[in-house]
Amino acid sequence: MLIVHHLNNSRSQRILWMLEELGLEYEIRTYKRNRDMSAPAEMKRVHPLGKSPILEDRKPGGDVTVLVETGAICEYLVGKAGGRLRPPDGGQDLLFYRQFLHSAEGSVMPVLFTMLVLSKVPIVGRVMARRVRPMLDIHLDYAEGELAARSWFAGNEISAADIMMSFPLEAAQSRGLVGEERPNIKRWLQQIHARPAYKRALARGGPYSFAEQS
Ligand SMILES: N[C@@H](CCC(=O)N[C@@H](CS)C(=O)NCC(=O)O)C(=O)O
Image (cartoon, rainbow, N blue to C red; front, side):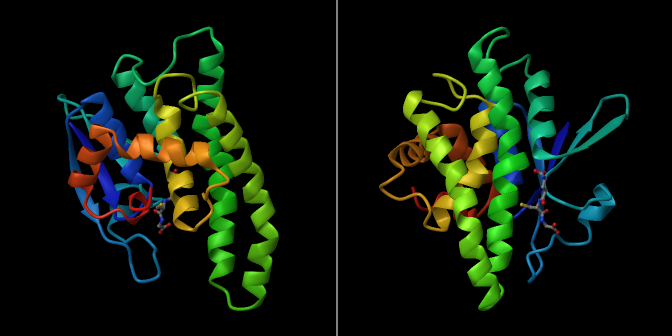
């Protein structure tokens, strides 16, 4: 049995979407962010990091696997589903897949998170956030160019790389950073939001403010 420990308005939304795309059965344990946006202490009872997402895989014999890191969880689920949502071996699509699967959390999210934290600090923080903005623009412009070349991040089929990239690009859009100058990111966001599996994940996970603007 798969159990997703799901924090509202968080990265775990991607795991719900991934599970819906794969048609795997799962249960959700829902947690609500504290006023300062941190995760509640109960999440630390499941894993010492206490961050979202956490996936538990409770095996029939009683063994339990506990996984953290969205990308690692996505790869685990791809493996469980016999390689679905992953391009075939040997081609360029698989290289794109690995690159975007990792760059979502490894490159784009750190810059976005830095901007978010700085923008909450009056005066000096906002000035610093404006300095970080060009670093984010590099990533957004790159994503725009890649999505101009093909329908999805790793070729002409959706993959787990798209699911990973959804959170940073939705967060960028909700901050007004995906305007008319980035039509391909806009089109891609509309594509993901139109998917039945994405909608099912939203219905099961509860309110998710980043999905509202495409
Ligand atoms: N790189 C990690 C980041 C995990 C993470 O920071 N999750 C956020 C939710 S979006 C969280 O739990 N924040 C609350 C906290 O740190 O207390 C992943 O992708 O799983």
